[in-house]
Image 1: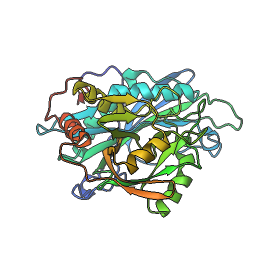
Image 2: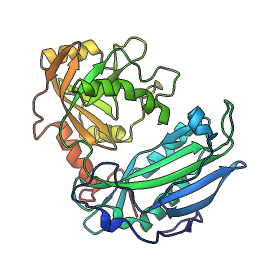
Image 3: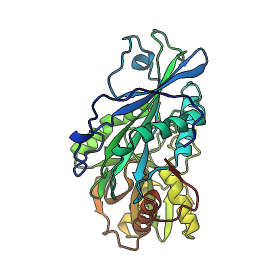
Length: 355
């Protein structure tokens, strides 16, 4: 493994690995031994280091705490039968991080630094990557402002970090969703397409209300008219109606450019599956539920890969979806993606990075 970024290593004195029960992982609860840290000062990135995971010191005046300059990514690493560690579409995450950074007035992080940091961190903590279907190592790269300053302006200093967490399945069962027509996640001209921390904070209240009503997630609608389906709370969303996959376009600036989404659409293209990248209206969705032309509905994202939707609440009524057939597109694409990620199937688009 060749790396061009000089990264210092301080290893943990006593690994936490013996304390982890890999047979009963709870998503996001267990954190691996080490983390990568880099600082941006005087216009450049430096002080690259891998250190034991632990607390860090920031000032009460830290700009992130007051003005919210924070972005992040979500990725996963897998272990194949040979014991090799495979990372899914790392270059795409590096690119999207920089797109978010540009929108949030944050510095660009060279892709070489991102990838070298990822490779070296995973090499150090490779024993934390679970082996077995359904399990993976969740990877959290993030960047935030470091100025100790009160005043609304872009920070002059930043920190970029990566830490990891062994995880099991994000959703262990199909999910129920509620079409949200009151609250707004994003509007044109806003930060909806950036993976910015504040976007998630703003979504918590309406999502919690839906959960108290018995639904797992929201289906967000557009902020102007609430008449078009955009995405779900933690996922892009895809519908199959009369044999055609329909998913919202990502060029309008309100929807996250999901990497799992683009992978699903690429496989659909490979297979000759009809796809329409357009907004599905709320009324179209309601009609398809009523006349039973909605064949499948599923979320796509890093955490869940594919989350099957079995209930949709719309205009005060719950609609139950039929059980997903073994030959359904969502089932087939999940098997294909898992096969690629775990090194069991060919990787025709060279999505996997081997550590």
